[in-house]
Amino acid sequence: MKTIKAIIIDDEEGARRLLKNALEEHNTNVEVLQTCANVPEGVLAINQLEPDVVFLDIEMPMYSGLELLGFFKEISFEIIFVTAYNQYAVQAFEVSAIDYILKPIRLDKLESAIEKLRARLAIPNMSKKLETLKSNMSSDRIEKIALPVSDGLIFIKVSEICHIEADGSYSTLSLLHGNDILVSKKLKYFEAILEDNTDFYRVHRSNLVNIQNIQKYNRHESNVLMENGSIVKVARDNKAAFEKRLKALHT
Image (cartoon, rainbow, N blue to C red; front, side, top):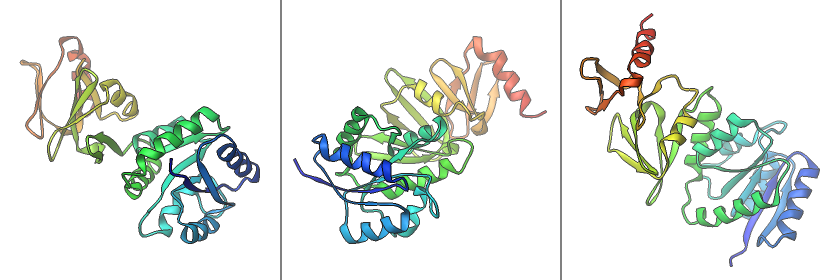
């Protein structure tokens, strides 16, 4: 098994030491090349040592971990954030397809992160993931999401979604522009990540629509025509509440 070369960037000396010891003492096959106390020090180490992965704290003096992106034209290494952030930030990591470990570090979570890292090293797209994460972290709601597809990840703006239709353990995203996307995520997953986005409404047990992308609502036929031409059925039980939501947009 190939040894993974790593750099740790964290302003807390104790946190750096604990993570380094955990990686080296528990047979993760990760070699810690250097530990750094801030982003500029980390940038120098990355340029000199060319690691496979950087374990990166977010809240640090001078520069935050998210600002690491600004020091490189291209990110040629993976990043695993080590953070004590709140639930919203954790959600932002997940929808941006960026791995994270919560402080205090649990060994099982660390081992899981390393296992997923090995798979991701074969498909480098860290720059795009970081751009998506920065977009999500700078807003009070999720703006972009990374979706797993057969050959990797596709990144889309939430505003581009017309509706999301359930299909068992899968969901189909119908977009304003472009082809539909089938992903191995249940509709409940999208409901959870978009719960703070009032543009999305579940009109049917199998459909979540983006109200901003509705072209016409036909109350007699109980359906909506989306901007991309899709027609979505509105369930009888949801009709009154849905009409109330639409009315609220114009008051």
